[in-house]
Image (cartoon, rainbow, N blue to C red):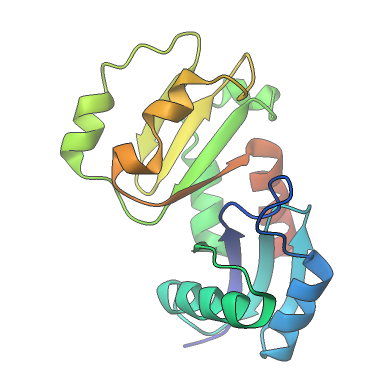
Length: 180
């Protein structure tokens, strides 16, 4: 497989004092393992790198390497550069992108079961809003995420797949980094 830019999203790292991963150590580890042009964004586990591995294989390899070398068990979700560009293009909440800290994308390990999506379709969490699209959920939190009823409703145990969330600023910056 030809090497391509990929985005690795570590789930639940550096939240308070738990599951700490230093970004310089992470970059060094991944470069040592042979991944190309490794870059990180902010301290929440966002990595852009070049790899010839398929996304699923890369997810598993990164999870094992991070656990073995950094002592942190975390799920890693990967999107290729083109998949991330598609996430941005598919945004059903374009007007909300004007306030990028309130617009989030939850990246999912797989598409949820259609029955789960249907079961949540009538959920009233106004003024918050959400939309499922493939392996992503777009969410709008005009009052912030601190006390979000919506986030409880779309938690992993409710939708049946693993997720990790990023705000719109981070999503668009990751694509810009992949394009550099």
